[in-house]
Amino acid sequence: MRKLILLFGLSMLLANCEVSEEKGLIVDKAMVVSARQEASKIGSEILKKGGNAYDAMIATHYALAVVYPVAGNIGGGGFMVYRANDGKTGALDFREKAPITAHRDMYLDSLGKVVKNKSILGANAVGIPGSVAGTFEVHEKFGTLPFKELIQPSIDLARNGFKVTEKQAKSINSATEKINKVNNYTTLFEKKWKKGDLLKQEELAKTLERIRDFGKDGFYRGETADLFVNYVTNLGGIVSKQDLEKYEAIWRKPISFDYKDHKITSMTLPASGGICLAQILKSIEPFDLSNIDHNSTKYIQLLTEAERRSYADRANFLGDVDFVKVPIDSLTDTNYINQRMASFSWDKATPSSEVSHGKVLGYESNETTHYSIVDQFGNAVSVTTTLNTGYGSKVLVKGAGFFLNNEMDDFSSKPGVPNVYGLIGSEANSIASEKRMLSSMTPTIVEKDGKLKMVLGTPGGSTIITSVLQNIINVVDYNMGMQESVNQPRFHHQWLPDIIKMEPNGFKKETKRKLNTLGYEILEKNSLIIGKVDAILVLPDGKLEGGADKRGDDTAVGF
Ligand code: GLY
Image (cartoon, rainbow, N blue to C red; front, side):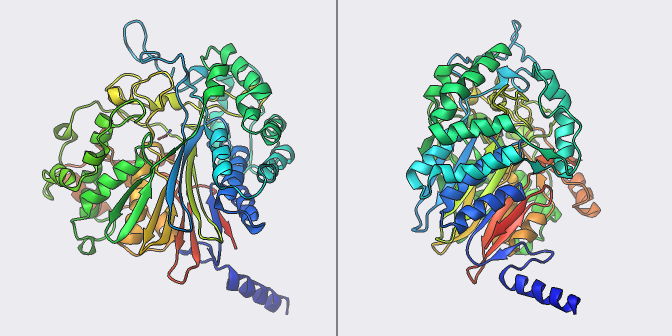
């Protein structure tokens, strides 16, 4: 009898809220998908209370800053793309910027060589954070619930603590040595963490309370700014109070383009994602994918060659549009793209050296995080935010409890010398006072026939663009459901180094052998840099399916 009741209860639950192996969570009205269950739940509760997607964005963002310190942040920055229920789209740039006293050669030694790790580890790597300013911009333009209500659940979460997951314990423990090295006091991350441990962050709770009570000034001025600037200065960094006071998030016009019968809206510069996504999708659009099996040799070959050409352009042309002229229209022009693809051949790989020049370098694991939200009113937001690599610069502001980014490494420290992702930049992305560093973040929204279809994005450094790309193709060309799409093995090429990076065990031996024969070098490596896609698909019946990446602790919550 108990069993029967249990089964009945389960089927009732499934009537509203279905979950199966390849399918993600399916709900009727509204959903948040993020890197942590706690954050998705906090965002979803705000929606349940009657808040909109923008309110939920703010609540989810602060929750991730507490529960996902590897990438969730107030000490970093990011980008938001939105589509309101009336079809209007827009984008917010809350990317970090270089300090006022930053200069082009700040990471070079007296011989003009890049000083190893100076732009990656410690106080010198820190860009001026934009996240808090971003949330206040969103609130001012679109918020409906009081800011205090949106941030309070995160204050409570920081104060009362949350349970560390197995993946998280591993992640924190792997960063401990660097955190110890960089900071001049015993941080709360120093102990050995294990699954189920409670992580309480009282200093962070107090910082969030200052933001609750004093608004943007609770971060960019007053006690938090004092703690921030004094500590960074103590550690040899150059961030000043003026830097913090001057920071502003900027509303920008997103990149919009058609792919087959879909309209794609994605982030514009200083994020390279939208431009690269447009270039790659337009490069493959003339090819009939219905004759090409998913993840087959031909499929990988076609995407790789399109990616190669786009990443070469990225390296040469892209930077902060407020500082350099970027020919966005020419780069995304169909004739130009067709010309670029004219040298593509099914018979052999195009060596990257023939597309352009550069040097080969390796990868390091990195982190960023993405969350997707659709509300019960039909608004959608797609947000990618980051500290850059995991736990950013590893500087944990003494007395204020938050990690600072190492976003300065996303600049080209020296034209032609690769950054932590092996990405090469040109003069367009060189460092200048108050300039924003080029990003790969690609928060994206897809619509069809004037209706919302998909909201997606991912972390993964340089692989962000190609992970978003593959999920669009999975759904648009291969008709996959959201979770099914997110589960698919992924691969990545970025011009230099001239290799295809693949998730281990995801691709057939025969496919890899054929690719080798055609001249493609393959690197199979288990790492974080192939992304963790968090996405929402609007199903034909109007319900929402979540795609929460099982590569992490990512979770969809909704109703
Ligand atoms: N920090 C990674 C990116 O913005 O692309």
